[in-house]
Image (tube, rainbow, N blue to C red; front, side, top):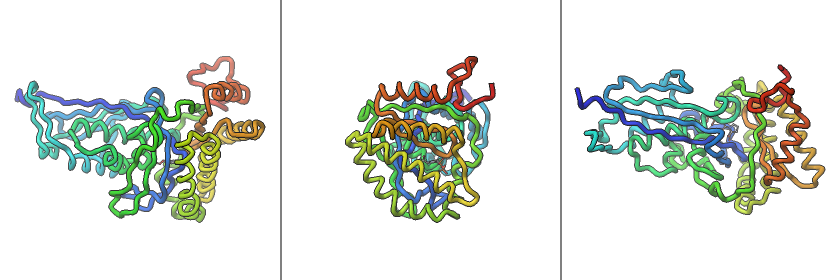
Length: 354
Ligand code: 2P0
């Protein structure tokens, strides 16, 4: 019985990411294989990230999961696929001091406890599933001594949530759609690290912290089934933009980066509108922020700020540098003045409920 009294634990943290070339549409729903490549920027760990502690003990009777302190079922296909893949790659773990010895085979019968926290609103279009699955896969890989590289781990995280495969790396990341039916060549790579483009600043005015109405998984399924624009986009538009975006990132060319980022966001939402029934992810406040940025960029004669918006109303803004970011905040406060009683830490743009 004494030998049973151990728990092994690993805690990891992973940031979320924001796509600038959008992933929208799958060719294989089970393996999560996309219809086009995508490119994203990974956030830093401070503001939009997930912290996950995974533990194993011979006293655990089942695999269990807690998200933000509340227990959730692990029975969903996405969790099961990730856990199965990780168990199949697990290695030997030995801790002589504690008298722990786990062999590759033992992992099939040992159970896991997973506790995960997000430091930002879940499911408001700020990609919580991306940091969540990336963090889960990374933490388990450490706990279970996987020898696989980040590329292979990204392919496992992909099977939890597509965008998660891009959160295994910092900086600028590309997810290859791949050609194979088994998903073996659909993984992410780092294009440039987090120091590459230090001037670039991200500003996220919170438009809503509410749950979105249509999940991305369902939304993109409906787009693939009903939109005619989506195939044209995946085959004709995205491949060219991928090449241009890689070039823009390499050269820290803000003009091209901004042009492509805004065009991608707008075409993604055009595909959403082209879906039947149409998907409305942006709201009036999102539209007003975009108009404000467009007007400013136009009046300056060149892009100062780029905007992008995912499957929710929050808009992510990229400023060329610190000075532009300061001016951007000024403009946002001018157009969306907070009520005098508003606590700026929880300030929601366009919120008139006070
Ligand atoms: C992206 N989004 O590239 C795109 C743009 C939302 C809009 O990845 O079904 O939560 O789990 O693979 O990864 C959101 O999709 O969907 C997403 P699943 P996921 O970031």
